[in-house]
Length: 445
Image (cartoon, rainbow, N blue to C red; front, side, top):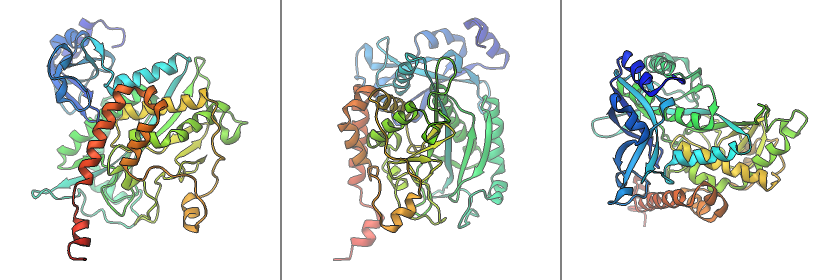
């Protein structure tokens, strides 16, 4: 449809039985929101946008009255595609506007500004995203449990019996994602009971973020069909590994050459690659607020042992060749940024990564000495460790507040809204009295 006029697009979609558009945007928490609008009015949705009450959306910062109180989600034509699980409906990604201007608190606009910074250098960032998730179930009393009660192995990675039991969900995902243009690479049972990973091909940063949002929309719908809940909660099981959302990052220049790669360089990286890595590590504490943005995220980012006997949690600010115990893993001239988890706002997390890495290049930052050992074994031995990430959301928020360089690059308006929302989330958690506290303290003194 790339070369079609608007009228031709409408006709082509109508020929496929499409009558409505799901105009979808992303709120500040990273949750897909939107509404159904008639396909016939596509020109309006593209040029003006589908209208929403701005203050009803998390993080817009829009007032309750006046011209700028309306949030308009402008349909991006290239994103239109029929939804296989919603007959008659085409999905469309939207950019946020208010008062006729791009909204500076819209996370997709924030990522577009970051990719524009790359484009000005003649560069394109390519991102492969690895979604990990849990399949849960909630009973009539509101209690949560694994959807598959038989998924109980001590070390369940690659468990084929669990895949057999949940094949209906996985195959429906295969069919739906294939119809939506995903190039699937693999599906497997991950390292925790009830946990899965579905991998698909990489794309440029903005398209990769859009694709991940569509992945989540699809997974929620397919899981619901099977009486299950698709969960992006980072750590639903206390004594098992949590879910990550690793970013595999590379950059090419205008001639298609790999900016990070140098076969003769240390770790197979170029000078620019090492500097980009240094920028990520330098800003890692502030990036934690964007990449690991929930209270629960820091239950995943802990060095505690796992029931499976293995943990891949990226706790320490280090990098090394194919070293999964480091925050940043280098492999084949690219980088795997292991900090993000699936509760993140994918647009904000990627924007932060772009700006942190470019700051490393522009400042010619020098990274630490590469790590060539198992950091968990080193930690157990009692040896000195690299600096670690913040231990909780409160510390990460403080780090973002203190990082004026990253805040300015990502956008002060966006970061102000983000910090306000996340401080409120932390304060709400801090005032909650948990079952653990009651059991430990109620009659202890």
